[in-house]
Length: 613
Image (cartoon, rainbow, N blue to C red):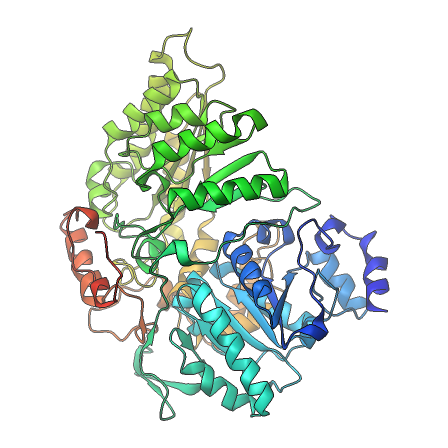
């Protein structure tokens, strides 16, 4: 009956393929043959969620488990969500169109703070009580992981348990615990206690926070014996031993990243001081070239895709990149399968690799300069120079590229207007390098896409203590950039500061921000990362209703001795290392890549963490 009701909605909504399921390579397991049914939710629309590599990995891992199955859930677009409420259709999975509430576990990935209202929408559409304390065994255990789980407190009301670190480890462990609890008939609370004893699993209901009169955190302690005071992240030491999908689902519709995606390495040693991923995903672990080639062959044969992306935080740092690119092009050139390389470092030796990737087709080259002057790049420890950029684009233009993307941030700590002027200066120099390339060599149609995003301080970075610029300061800097970025051949884009302001609130929020989040959702906020859906006035109303001051979280500098809402998590890098890096930033001192010598970040406490360094 539910399947028929869903079918009746599809011709009344945009992009019905979002809700159809039945794609090639989707996993279909008999629910009666397994002990645990796991619904995996991505809190955004299908075409965004289907592009997420981590979700593909966990979907594959769970479905390989003989006693579990995994089905996918995505956030319905507003038209479908409203129709589902009107027609009394609960949120459903794609594989079997089963109600989400009937599953044993609901996993949610936390990739971006502005998806938080969508999480509440998913729970409500599923008929699952918003608050963990109101749930029974009629509801699934709701568990969340991903980068935003490294500060889980803004979601503490709504999530039963958080998985901190590499999900390949904890996902199967949590399934086994739940399986045992179901078999023994223990209470839901006892199941949560057992989950809390797993490494990397945080159960917020088993902790209590108290506050000083000024609103800062006073204490954060477990409320029961046996609950760990510190939650230590999970970490896979060897990527070759980690499960990786050898077959992926091929959607009926175009998705954001519609291609084969192979993770070549995890982590980053560069130490950019603004970058949360570069800190929390340490140490660097490479997948062997042999394994990558094996995966590429199976994924090309099993999907029909004509593009392979080699992904990581810094693909140019992969030790065998030129050889790998050459081998991939040799194997797949006849099939017209192209190779794309995101996350390239300008100081990497990329010329040979770029020559390999152009054999089939060219795509735009992306350069993340982040700051316009060398002074500010030293502050943020970016580790690249203007010469790196001009030399790299010269080689690219001489090799037939004509499309370049430049990424910057503004509002960085210690930034001046001279640093902003440097953004326009670099864009001008890229354009100049194109016209210095002989006409008979360069490709026609120069396109330089330059974007500037607002700096957001994040947990577990050296800038976690820094104040974010106010919205008014961001807007003044935007106006300045717009005036100076009128450059022929350059398209300039920027991010809205109101969104970045809210991102900062929840990136560094404590438990009190959960009340504002719930109030905003009740006022109609959802899809906050989508410009046409964002309702800043409703968010301000929610903060006023709940007495939560958003500027307290976004625009306030923290002191060294302040207890931070995420201090109970051990992310590998120590707080003393992060503070030392913050001090070096203030004095403009860069820190070398840890592959050139250990910088004492704290990871050597973990067995096998920095082997081969």
